[in-house]
Length: 278
Length: 242
Image 1 (spheres, chains in turn orange, yellow):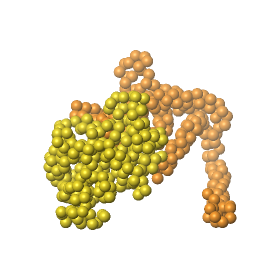
Image 2 (cartoon, chains in turn green, brown):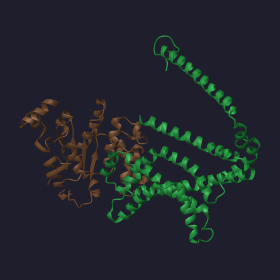
Image 3 (tube, one colour):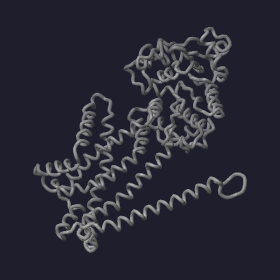
Image 4 (cartoon, rainbow over the protein chains, first blue to last red):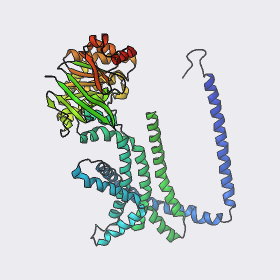
């Protein structure tokens, strides 16, 4: 933006805003440094600091357990990687089942309603226990008694209920005039859904689904309660072995390395969508 | 026999009577303009003819066939009747060409390549052949509305309905859309149009109908209706808009 007349160079408004920005940055920097200094100085003054430092922030144990924990985290990533696409598809089936109109398919609709009610209403950890211990308890043979299968199923069933509701909100957000336009051309309801409504609905809920993915990535750790030696369980093993809590801190840092960039990306998508809408 | 015949059509929305026993007859190749105040039922009438809104009573006949029977599947009927909306309603995630191709592809089960020559010819006919690959938000309002008209024409409808298709346009874009209608008229398309473009109605329409309180209060050739309205209400409306 340059001034269209008068001398070249920044306008009066631009000079004022540059000054205000510089002043704002300086204040933000100053206050951040002050807070950090206070934390660094004050926390070590606490009477238990030396003990906490030894059992939670032990550099030597950090270095020793990090490779093993990173290795264990790959299992979390693998479980996440096979659950996420199945959730995306199963949730869509549930979302569409709630919208069927044919009386003959009413049971399907009823099933979808009951399904979402049940799986949104029970804590994930309870579902993991009930399915993870319950189904192998039927006396299934290898490999069908694997906690990987049933733990993953528990996550898939729970998350699909939430993601189905997200899809539904997306479907409902597509304006009625889009449906009218599709129907006026003589398209069937199924084609209207598939070609006109769903492509727009799914695009709109990408940011919301990103948040579900991040939550799923964290909740994979819940499977540690039924057996799989993923990062949380591995950290527990190290803790017992070394009588030190640092492995838990390592595990937390490993999670953050994945979830913070993912969260930022989701925020970016939401901001982009808001800009497009305005 | 009239191409389109409405008899005693009634439509209620949440207890409010929008259409109260409306009669209308449209001959083959005619352009019929519906005029009247906002809320007089023009849009509802067009949506009812396209079977988007089911009528409560009366009947709608297309080539003598009762298309308003409640037990009838509306889908094949809609394929014979094109409808263009005030706000274009193009599908924003598809290019202009994909917008136009969707219905023929799905309904006539033809491939993109088989359809392309015919679709390209349609775009060329209305001067939009260089816009086929554009998305709706890359087009001006006038261009979007012309694509919407092409989309309806691609199903080769027997009759076209237009619902105030220039009302959402900037004034300088109205002309290009009305030119499309003139062209369709010269090609013999049967059309029903709800409009506020009185000078266009006067120029092109074979018949103008004044809607008031859910029925047609007065109808006739434009010269007669505009110059010598019989009803005081028609005269008052025309004085207000002209």
